[in-house]
Every structure is written in C-alpha cells, then in structure tokens.
Image (cartoon, rainbow, N blue to C red; front, top):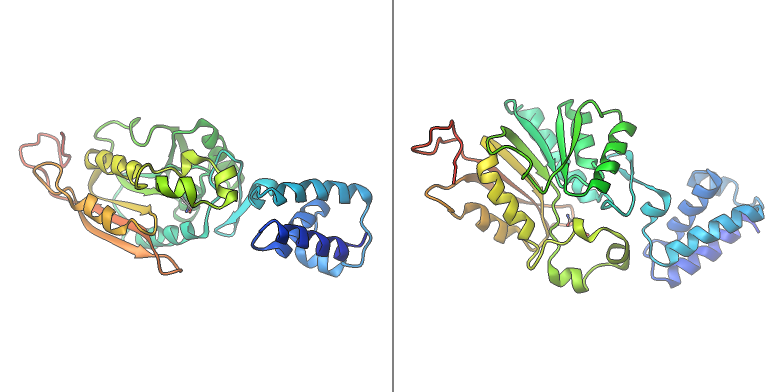
Length: 304
Ligand code: GLN
C-alpha cells in the first residue's frame, strides 16, 4: 500500500469517528510510525509501506478512532514551541494557557516584582513552570496534589533543562506552605469545569481520557478557586499577584469572590478579567493589597 492511499483511507476512518481534523491526525500518526515530518510524507507519498509499518499504524489509528487524544498517543504536546511529555495523568496543555503565560511574562519583564516565591499552582505537566523558568530564569515552585502528575512535571523540567530552577512539590493547593511563606506570585490553571459541563459538556477526548482531577471544579466550577482565594488571603505577600486561567462563564463570579470582604478588610485589589483570542473571558488577575492590617504583629500578613 502507498503512503498516499493509506492516508486517504485512514482520514476517512477518523472522519467517520467524528474527529475534527482527520487528515492532519492521520498524517501525524503515520509520521510518528515512519519517523517522518508531514512534509516528508508528502514528498514520499508514492512510496510503498512495509506491512510492519501498516500494522503499527493501524493500532495507533484504532486508538485515535476511539477518541484517545493525539497527544497521549504520541506522548507529546507542543506548547510554547516546546515539546511537553504528556500522559493521561496530566491535562494536555492548551493554547489558551500560552496567552496566560504571555501576560505573566510581560508583567515580570515590565515591572520585575520584588523577591519572593513564584508558584505554579496545579502544575500538571509543568508547562507553566517550565516556560516561566526558561523565559524569566527565575526559581519556580511547581505544586500539584497528584504525585503521578509531578513525575511528568519533573520529566519535563529535565527535558527542557530547568530542573535547577523548578522545584516540584506535592501539596493540596498551598496547604504544605507555612502561613507566612512569602509567595509573591501565583500562576495557576486550576480545575474550573462545572459539574454540569463535567456531566454533559465534555468532548469524548476530554471526558474519556483526560484526568478529571485536573478539570473538575465542583458545582459551578468555582470550588477550587474559592479554596485558592481563601488560602491566598493569608499566603500571598502584600503587593503579590495571582494570574489564573478561568472558565468562560466565570469572570463575574470570580471578580465578586475576590472583592468580597471576608474579614474586616478587603484583601485583594486591581482585580481584572481578560479575554482569550476567541473573545471569551479566560484570565483573571488580582493583586494582594499592600496595606498592613491593623493590630497585626506580623508584617503585612493578615491572620484569621
Ligand atoms: N480548558 C480546559 C477544558 O476546557 C479546562 C482546564 C481546567 O479546568 N483547568 O477542557
């Protein structure tokens, strides 16, 4: 069988299975089997395939036909023009998250915030931590509750040469940190998918294969974010920042959450929601107010 014939036949198979980009997926799978780029496949379209290659390809095609994400089959996902290792223990990095990183990186370059810990909260594959460490040459603490996810974080740090800058830490959000830990910036893509969407609105690729732990944000998708806000009220240094990816329907609720007084003082200021390239609310940022709370013996931190 010729390369072009197999590609045509398998694109039809994937199209029937409801895959959005059947031709590209077929090419990437065959390219993976033959160790060829897509351009090389076109250049060699009239070559005859060995039966071993065809058998290997058919087994990968079957997986994709059953809606397993391409990234899990290939074991990598490109993000920030880097190849990140991915397994079903971690969410596949999404392009929106690159925009979150652009915002954080330009913020750091413009106004180099004072020293303090930089944390990637709910780090999964480590994509955020690796890019921040590489671009800013700063130390990053990469936190996740999942030990299996942290193994992938670690592997990605090694792959991209930032193991000396990134410290993976297993923790349920910030519970492993001391109350006054001097965190100056938290960047996070937390689980924010609502229960309704988890039950009914996910693509088969996401629902069947991606870790629900990394997606499920509880009733309105805000439960983890509420916990993050509560922890940051005591953990984020005065003047410190939170940059977070959020769901498209959550901007208003999250602004309200972060501007609601829990105690005698308003903890967060400079609260804003920004949109992704599709024009949907997607990012949230807030700054910890720099004022010292009254009657506190501890510099600038509020204790409840
Ligand atoms: N953007 C992801 C999705 O739509 C969700 C990521 C998350 O919950 N952090 O599947």
